[in-house]
Image (cartoon, rainbow, N blue to C red; front, top):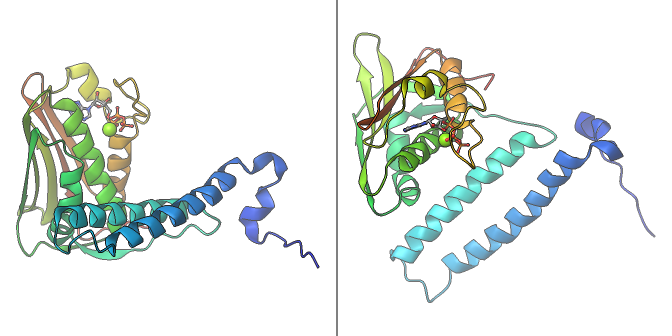
Length: 236
Ligand SMILES: Nc1ncnc2c1ncn2[C@@H]1O[C@H](COP(=O)(O)OP(=O)(O)OP(=O)(O)O)[C@@H](O)[C@H]1O
Ligand SMILES: [Mg+2]
């Protein structure tokens, strides 16, 4: 007997034949992530890959990144869910340091400087991680040849906000680019979407914070997120 299942939920109601493009892609992404997850899991347990070796560390980074892709795909799914976590920014940065390093080419040095005992923020941990990755990718794009990126988190004593900064000594921005940099879809890159800084700004605003960009041509750029422990990212 063949059973033809019925799709359920509001998402399915809008997914008429003419409107299944995004749901279909999310569905097929799920299949691919399943394959990737199984392959990475098998590799992690493979006898040829020694515990505590560099390949094991790379695999852990890849599995971590795949988890984040799953989390993002869930937000496109029928029941989008964003968890609110109690996030200690310093600990969060140190936990993903290995993954951040994978995003940076070896010719560029990456330093991580975090103050201990920062106030706890109420936000989605994965959103914060994505914002950091976006800022680091921008910094990598801006650094020509070898260069330096510093990621830091400290307490802004006057306001008691957590100040997260990504600084680079890359090309910097002209005044015109600086003015428009965080506007959605503004990009100067051939393959850019212009959404990285816009997403960072949205995340920061949702935490009742401020995003500031300081940049000078030929000297570099520092993007600062001042995040308030009093705010909660609910609508992000
Ligand atoms: N660290 C930086 N140094 C110099 N310019 C930057 C830096 N970060 C951002 N910009 C400028 O701001 C623009 C917008 O950045 P944003 O991250 O929003 O989009 P993008 O990087 O162009 O595209 P995508 O994030 O999709 O790859 C960039 O195209 C670039 O011109
Ligand atoms: Mg970007």
